[in-house]
Length: 437
Image 1: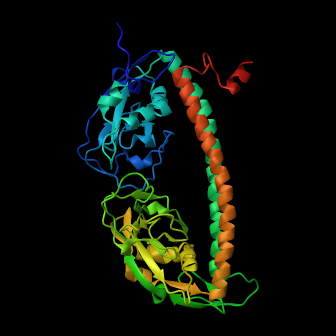
Image 2: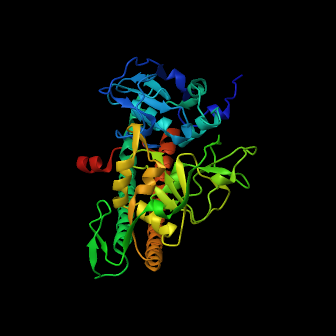
Image 3: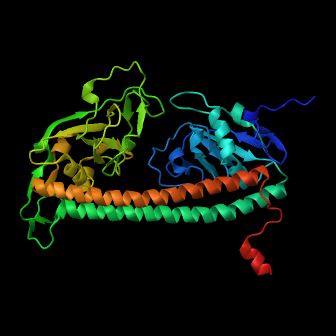
């Protein structure tokens, strides 16, 4: 009598299925002493869902506990598997100890990669994780999963079919994401022009003492940020859950809540119900947030808190700034802080023992110089920036919806091919068929 498989372990397919561990040889060779010359792949270097590598990741490259891989090996990240980070090695190297190194035996390497990136596989692995803060999947579960394993020729046909179609989809996604970047750059250029030059054209200017800022309107003054700060304080980083806060829960902001002048309150992590939260750490509408520690490119990012939809606290790696609004609007300050001219001062004052994590002090923030228009013009500048940002965000939202649909189409293609629902027997790229005809 046949024993029915546990549905969680079984990916349904028209092809025969086998436990993954019977089709691969899991490699666990450790690298003793990695050097800067070695090819090291960290988790941040792997794009989610695509299998692509980005070789300029920001994460520190660990030198201990690394696992060795060879060309043709397929690596799958068992930490937070919902991120769907897997790749096929094309040269020898070593990777984060969170990678499972799988050497295909009954699988074509490209087919195996698509299998590991299929929604069904990732969802089942994610459902098996243990650990609240750092959810991981075990090899015992992953290796025991029954996965589709057609004959090698069919696997090669599937890989060729998916290579063709996913590359076309990926190209469309890249073009739309580049367009999003162009739109963002245009907005930042418009905002910088307003913050440094004002709303009136043809006015007289005078030389500026602000670093990298050549001139400002002659009816403006220049000032130091510290002269307008009522209070600046660090946040607090208590233990938090991996999900956002819900209902009446407190949430601690993630660094990603501050994004190039925009406040993203949804970027938070829920606190335990018994956490004793002091009111000093709660953010309020009108605050300016500055990230005080991050990578050199992101440290000093700032935003104005325009809404507080729930009880949120700033983390230890942020400053909360309460601005004296008699001469400086907090909205204008936040917009100034994300200009390239302000970034030059931020980079000069950001220091740290690691190149990937630097910090800025309260004294440095207070010392930064900035232009200071009259209050009435600050209001007009901010209004024009916000109007332009709203239009920009609408365009970006439309593009991201389009990207989401393309990503869903890519997943559907992979799922149909892996399950045997796609008719790809003897499939050839259209260009090759036309050439043969």
